[in-house]
Image 1 (spheres, rainbow, N blue to C red):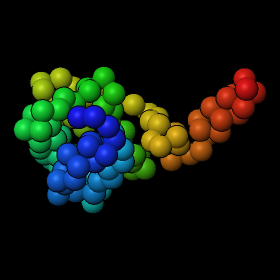
Image 2: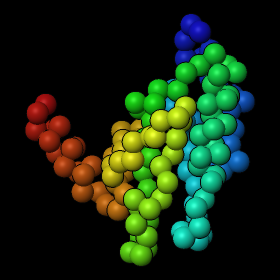
Image 3: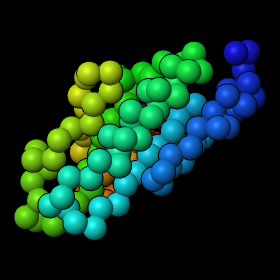
Image 4: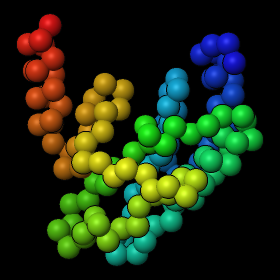
Length: 125
């Protein structure tokens, strides 16, 4: 591949059966579960498909940059009880905050962490 336009052509056929967003060199997949007490296999299925698709297209998944973020407001749900996503036999890191397109999204959907980082960055500049 010689550049971003070539990459866009390659990922053009990458689709999932759940919600997703593709941009430049990243893909974000999400699943909304109605019954949080029933394990939703949609994201693991998407991860498995992504691995297969990447292999077929001569690409590799950077599992060090791949993260799982759980957003759940049901106090009865314990995130540790939800099986972690797995890629190539390795569990994906589960994080409380993740940066997507310059915005820090937190598992509680608050702006606190994002604002702290933006304020810290503006003071350093």
